[in-house]
Amino acid sequence: MTVRTDNARVGAGVQEHARSKVYVELTKPRITAMVLLTVAVGFVVGSVGPMSPVVLVNLLIGAGLSCSGAGALNQYLERQVDGYMDRTRFRPLPAHQVSPSAALLLGLALSIGGVAYLAATVNAITAALDGLTLTSYLFVYTPMKRLSPLSTLIGAVPGALPPLMGWAAARGDLGAGAFCLFAILFLWQIPHFLAIGEMYKSDYSKGGFPMLSVIDLGGGASGRQAVVYASVLIPASLLSSMLGLTGSTYFWWAVVLGAGYAGASLATVVAPNLKTYRRLLLVSVTYLPALLAAMVIDRLGS
Image (tube, rainbow, N blue to C red):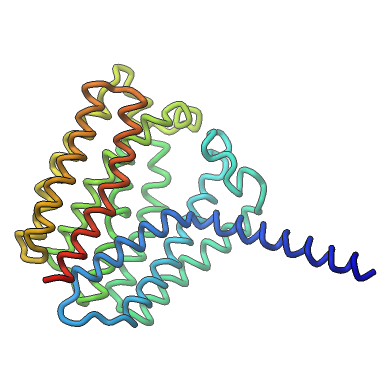
């Protein structure tokens, strides 16, 4: 009897652990972690004088709740389309690991809770920016993905708003430096998502997403656009030094990293194939944390 009881407890524990993993996956934790990084950078760069660790912690809690909720709601809205694509058909909803109603309730609770938490513990501007990020991501970008390749540009807006939340939490307003951070995040995203679009264009075609890689029958448009945005990103990334937010160390790191990103983008024009687009994706996910780290180190050392 004791052995059976122990086995039942172990089995129940395993099931509970598996269910917890499903709900965590529903919140897109890797994307949430990247968003929180940009929020924290906005807070550090925007701070004047000693930084408040209490405000920073509250900021990260609220932003983390909302971003996690947005991930769950996005998967709820795209649950049918996710089932058509190889890279998304094993997500919790198309794999029937969780019910749509549970995902919806979780997403609403986290999203609304995050905005309310920021309003109560940080300030109204930060909470408003959080609400704007959620609504533009879920109700503008998500449906637009099925309608136009311009969705990549539209989706870059909510993706670039989180550092403004950090800045607003630190200063209580928005200034030129905040929009400099916005520009960096906005421009960085375009080559990044163009590379993903090329790597998974057969999947996007199955899902009915009119990505540039899907509708560009002649080929090469993704690479050319990547070069344009990566090139414009270089002067945009230097604005923080021109505004006095960062110094010469960050300036030269931004030049080197920007040249590498532009070079990887140019390689997709010279040789538009899976290898060069995969390399561009790798460079993109290296570029952003490296640039933000250089910005924070330079800022804290000034």
